[in-house]
Length: 265
Image 1 (cartoon, rainbow, N blue to C red):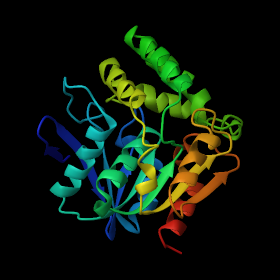
Image 2 (cartoon, helix red, strand yellow; image 1 turned 135 degrees about the horizontal axis):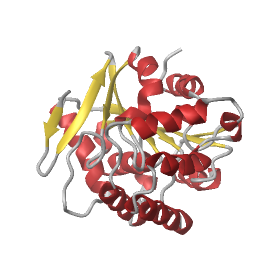
Image 3 (cartoon, one colour; image 1 turned 60 degrees about the vertical axis):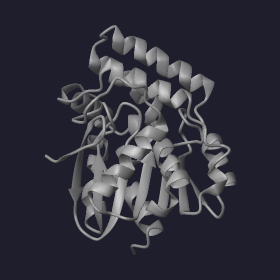
Image 4 (cartoon, rainbow, N blue to C red; image 1 turned 180 degrees about the vertical axis):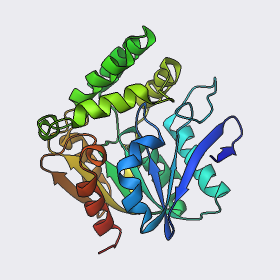
């Protein structure tokens, strides 16, 4: 599988399909595998690029402090490597933080922008919550139990009531050969704690879709709504029966909304 060598790390990536470029950016502790449920549909219309953020999956790690801006620069350098001047960009949660930094600091690289389950700043509550998750990971809590605790924060009541989905998700994550390390998770949550684009998001010119799950208790619709108020002519969609990870729990719903926004009938 391909990797691109950046100045301080190597970045794992995949390219699927053909058409206009579409870049997918994953969230906290996740990697390119988090898009598995949607990449097939999206890549039937777009050249779909997904990658592992530094330190996750099959990408390299480094000792320097992480910042969201640095992770955004990684994504831009990947586009440079692939000779892609401009792409649609989808970012989920922390990936939405990264996507915002790209749109603010590299506006010429972004066509349309989709921000899913994200906000312009991380709440103090979430920063404390993430630190508690880090401590459990550092103490080598059973990884399946660690993932199970996350499911209560990222999935909707509908998904919990729908049978075996959650148990299958936990099983897949527990058996995944490239789990996030405690060191990387710590670096990511430090980056998140210092992230704040409230003074910059007003400069975003890309046509933007903001997706919020009505049942999102991690990054609430009210927090996502700040983006809608600040990004000129953005479109805000509040989705019933969805929570934080809409693209995981309801791929069909997610891809339908996204493809419509990107101009695919």
